[in-house]
Amino acid sequence: MNDDYLLKTSHLFCKFPSQKEWLLKDVSIDTKVGEIILIKGVNGSGKTTLLSLLCGIIPKEIKAEVRGKIHINDVEISDLTLAQSSPFISMTFQEPDYQLSFPKVIYELAFGPENLKISRHEIEDRIKYVTELLKIDHLLYNDIATLSYGQKKLVCIASIMTLSPKILLLDEPDDGLSFASVEQVKKCILAYRNEKLFIIATTKSYFDDIADRKITLS
Amino acid sequence: MKPLFSLNNFSFSYDGKASILDHIDLDLRRDEVVILTGENGSGKSTLCNILSKNITGFRGNVFFEEKDFSRIAPSYLFSKIVYIKEQTQQNLLGATPYEDIAIWQHRFIHKYTKHLKEERAFILKKFELDTIADKPLWECSAGQQKRTVLASLLLQSHKFWILDEPLYSIDEDGRKILLSLLVQHKTHGKGAVIATNNPNAFSIIADRIIEISKSKITILFG
Ligand SMILES: Nc1ncnc2c1ncn2[C@@H]1O[C@H](COP(=O)(O)OP(=O)(O)OP(=O)(O)O)[C@@H](O)[C@H]1O
Ligand SMILES: Nc1ncnc2c1ncn2[C@@H]1O[C@H](COP(=O)(O)OP(=O)(O)OP(=O)(O)O)[C@@H](O)[C@H]1O
Ligand SMILES: [Mg+2]
Ligand SMILES: [Mg+2]
Image (cartoon, rainbow over the protein chains, first blue to last red):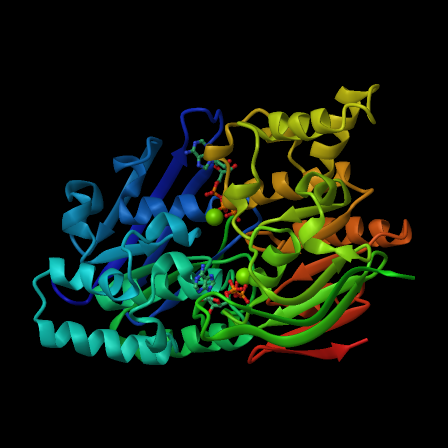
């Protein structure tokens, strides 16, 4: 892959085995690094489904009938395993407890980049930078089980930031955050704006002012 | 009116060092809607957990209906209050929205003997769950799961509601449905404590807005 990182879906269709009609119908997205895209829509409209498709969790981990193709540059997502694609495209989950799997915050944040054999020094730099931006640096050695909901949500966001894929899919990142915390998340997104592509699913309007485009599902 | 909950000189700490709440006094009346707000990690959920006996070990005095809180049996407490936890999953009882509501109905079977089916249909429809009534909850979207949890409130109109972040995962339509329930609840002389990061979302029904900050509480409104 070269580093322009164009993400393109053409005529994407998706439905779950129990569904009769297409949940996602003919979704075409054409976007690239440097953009912030919002995915909007009411409860059950398919926002989480779309993000899961983009990063390959559907159909690799969750079964569904899929038509159409998803490309990052000239590579088709379905040709990669999740382990191969996650350094390029990764997602934070709507429910933080489904994402967090380590006892302490610091392990959670170090795991992704350690797996990619990033140098220790670089990992420390990333963790310091991101946790200071999100104002969770005082929680680094806390047990994740004892964090408040919003603190967990911030750790999820921090952990995708330290993994640092080119394309970041954030599922309802504002949910559970105070106004001040949302502002910190926005700052963090803006700090990476030029080098990354953010796709944010949300029912709310907190990110409207920093977004380049909105895609509404119905 | 006598307060339902009364906290006097109340303090709480998880580790015996840092106080989450430090020497606070707070009365909650059974007929008022109190919004509890504050930064992430300020102690909103902690307070909700204390009021519903999920966490013990505080200092100071807590009274429920003017009786010593530590002597109130959980079964009695939960006949008077309902507690909706912050994590959606922890509130779900059934495998489908339909079953979840049916279980809640069953808990009050002595009160609702007739029209169970009609009642269930009404409740599911109110939260727009009728089309997915028989869908396994683990296949439902986060908002659909949360709507199922909130729908159970329709069976608990006789209680005082403790709602920890009821708007998580909920879209604007869902917020309006919840607000209409709260308006009705209040009209019937019933109250609630609502922990939320977004007090504005409840401003039309709030009697008081209380903020937790640096282990203290401040009344922002009311
Ligand atoms: N079991 C625990 N042990 C130790 N500390 C805890 C425990 N539970 C919560 N805390 C800490 O207590 C503080 C208050 O947490 P609480 O969950 O009450 O916050 P909150 O106001 O509900 O936050 P949020 O808006 O993020 O839900 C947080 O700093 C949290 O890290
Ligand atoms: N694994 C699954 N199996 C069957 N149906 C599913 C599955 N996952 C989701 N669905 C259904 O597909 C639809 C879209 O779900 P999705 O989670 O993508 O919605 P969403 O827009 O993210 O909603 P929310 O705002 O509530 O998070 C919903 O009707 C849901 O019930
Ligand atoms: Mg979703
Ligand atoms: Mg909380």
